Amino acid sequence: MRKSILFLFAIVCAAFMAAQEQLPKWEKGYLDIHHINTGRGSCAFLILPDGTNMMIDAGDFDNEAFDAKYAPMFAPQVFPNSSYTAGSSIINYLTNVLGRDKLSIDYFLLTHFHSDHYGSVRSVSGTSENGYRLTGLTEVGDGIPIKTYVDRDYPDYNFPIDLRNNVSGNGGVESATFQNLLKFLEFQKTNNGMKVEKFDIGSNKQFVLKKDPKSY
Image: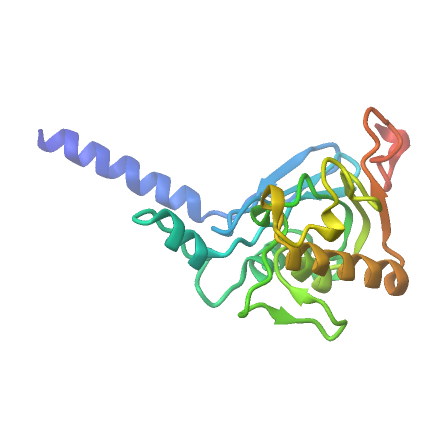
């Protein structure tokens, strides 16, 4: 029995030590997929074989509303600690992966308009000097340039319901958060040259390698 306990303890220690090691840096020819755990929703970051990168979602849901609605379940704390927001945690992660001198996102794909995928505007949300509130995607995009943004229905947003005038929050889409996204997109498009596009189903031209496409 004692040997079994010691064996299990050794395995736990080895796993802990392995978790402390830095991930190996991306190398040309590799596809890196990072699932970034902030405790506040979905965020994946891909580095493609030629170095082109892509982020899919950047969530930040309202943990207090979650706790009230789903008690006794409760939302986890922001990872790595409570001094971070979800957006700043993602920015910190990308800074460590890419380095400060290469901080940019080639493609951002928003899968849908629920807060755990792009943010939730709350009273505690900061405000950018550019006029929009900072939460999830907008916080990440305020700190790191996004070159091309893609979602399912830009610029119409009228299927299956009119999201621009969805004040009731139908479909779980928070009106204030969605309007804040529109303000963010307009500012970044007008002032920083961000391309904003509707997802082109079946296209092989919307998401392309940018750094060294001929090699792959």
